[in-house]
Amino acid sequence: MASALFTLSASAQGSVAVESSADEVITLWNNATAPHSSLDTKPEVITRRGSGYKASHTSETVFYLFKAKNPTGQSLIHFPGGGYKSVNLNFGMAEWLREQGITTLVVKYRLPNGHKEVPLEDARAAIAYMRENAERLGLDPQKVGVSGNSAGGHLAAWCSNVLPLEERPNFSVLIYPVINGQMWSYKGQQSTLLELLGKWRTSADIEAHSADLLVTADTPPALLLHSDDDVVAPPHNSVLYYKALKHYGVKSSLHFFPSGGHGWIGRDKWQYRQQWLEAVKEWILSF
Image (cartoon, rainbow, N blue to C red; front, side):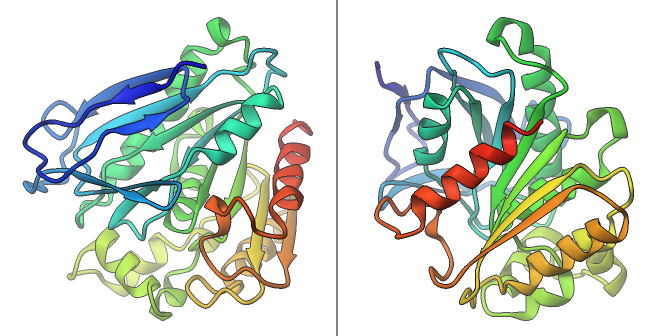
């Protein structure tokens, strides 16, 4: 398959081009054209990071679309992690799901820089894009899910609970997600809170962005995957969200792996790689 190539602005000194096997690369908007701006004036920089890329100071929203040749009807929108300080792009899951008949959209969203409405705005637009293009992609507009890892997991859970009901995803896949604001004092999670809400955050702000406290009977079903030895985003995050879902009778599933720590979504040789991918596939196809 031909490689899709997105070349950054020349103003982003030190950046590299993002190469992927995506079937389409769509630039949605930037800080100047989107409804809200992060007010980050530093140039966007993208560097290689393992098998993927690390995008910092993101000011332009880009969708990487992986179209299934024989679509099942279900689709997934993925928000990468990075502590709301970077967007760590990795396309391995999207490439695998494409081969399973599941069309996937990977989102390079704009980082908040203390302006919490910005990543949520991009997530909302991604869901709308998938539904608006469902017919041409052979998808069911009522089988659109969101996924995310780490801070991206927070974004997926957040939009699942605060968007208008008709705009919410139909299900979610949360991979070692950051969920509860009180848990954000653990190691890297404190900086996640700072990047999202800014230094003038209040206890009310923290509660309003703790996804487990936002769950209702209208929250979309969720699959949660976590490593028991994760010390960056402790597994208790997933437990809290799962308990909240069960309290309201929302369909949910919680998978713990005995080891793996944090950040395993991009590890091709992780011993549980096939196991977690199959769990994601099974979950998505249940809708």
